[in-house]
Amino acid sequence: MHTVVVGTSGVSAADVVAVARANARIELSEEAVAALASARAIVDALAAKPEPVYGVSTGFGALATRHISQELRAQLQRNIVRSHAAGMGPRVEREVVRALMFLRLKTVCSGHTGVRPEVAQTMADVLNAGITPVVHEYGSLGCSGDLAPLSHCALTLMGEGDAEGPDGVVAPAGELLAAHGIAPVELREKEGLALLNGTDGMLGMLVMALADLENLYKSADITAALSLEALLGTEKVLAPELHAIRPHPGQGASAANMLAVLKGSELTGHHQDDAPRVQDAYSVRCAPQVAGAGRDTMAHARLVAERELASAVDNPVVLPDGRVESNGNFHGAPVAYVLDFLAIAAADLGSIAERRTDRLLDKNRSHGLPPFLADDAGVDSGLMIAQYTQAALVSEMKRLAVPASADSIPSSAMQEDHVSMGWSAARKLRTAIDNLTRIVAVELYAATRGIELREGLTPAPASRAVIDAVRAAGVQGPGPDRFLAPDLAAADAFVRGGHLVAAVEPVTGPLA
Image (cartoon, rainbow, N blue to C red):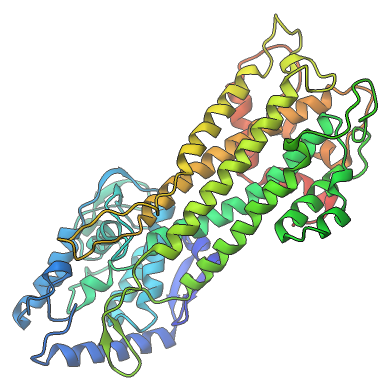
């Protein structure tokens, strides 16, 4: 099994995906253990002094003015976890919770939080045992950290609340810890606060969204090329010299991908045949511009994610000179903005894909294809309602593109009077990515059928490879009407699993 070693300088996006989705094993580096012990010594020294220090010997948030006596501080740390574990609604996905916990461990190991080494080791042990705290949909405003979600995770470390075992069965957390030989932690000064004060949930979802979108943008370039081919469009608009004079990197990459897929096609460039036209429609001709803008958005989001992965997000933080200082680094605005930006780009990518699908089905605009790609139009409805489903998904994606980060709602008696709503931005982006996958799958289904209906013309070798692979995956080709949902589900799985890209790249070489 792959092992991820957590040090003091952060982790990579690949590490997050490995832990969250592939159950990679976690180890703490010697450097991290030393940094944990050093920072803890500073916290212990401050805890012994009579002067109040926020998070060490005071209350929290709007209650920070109260100095807490030593005999009550352990109770204070337990209480903040218990009271903040106030999530409601459906359970959050296992991979999200694992990313959340792992990223909190990453910050703990930075040596800026004052958490003891044994607490960090317990976090690693819980993840390695496959124990996943039950975290709920609602409870984070994306400021002062993803509070309720992280608190539910910290509750598991204390042996309280519910968690899911490696067998997928939910049980009391204390029983699961005992079954794996893990002792519950007894929290000390600052530790409760440090376990729940970070942007880890929204960051984990951003990292996984970027991994999913990388596959989807390549897939969308492929389906756009297939649609261009099925519509007898021209590949001349994809020429590198045209994109060089508007040098957006993503645009050039998308055009190059489409050109690679179309190489060797006999279907392109028939503009002066029976239905002459000067130019293809925008949804075909401008595909690289739209997908490319989304790719450049991803590049910016990736930069933000990399910075956040290298960050230590906590309040207060332990500095190398021994100071423990309050700060506002827990505010989720940097992450929230790009989560919303990605949802906007994804909605537009879905929208242009749906327009190409509709064009394939409309006999007045498809340049010779049968109505709705039906076998016997009138008796058969063909893909008419597949496009309805696609349109419904696009419409929902437009709603999901409304920014969460433009909102704020005051909390904690106006102490926390401006929040990022980054968790909400991340949650809706996950839904948007699911929808985009389905939209691309419907275009794939329509475009491959359209190509097969162009009798007497040979598609590009890459297109032929896609058609062969998708048919082998259970997505049926042209013919009389049949129960369509299983075909669409198979196409969705084909795109979602990366099989569309995998079918093309042996022919084209690696896509950008």
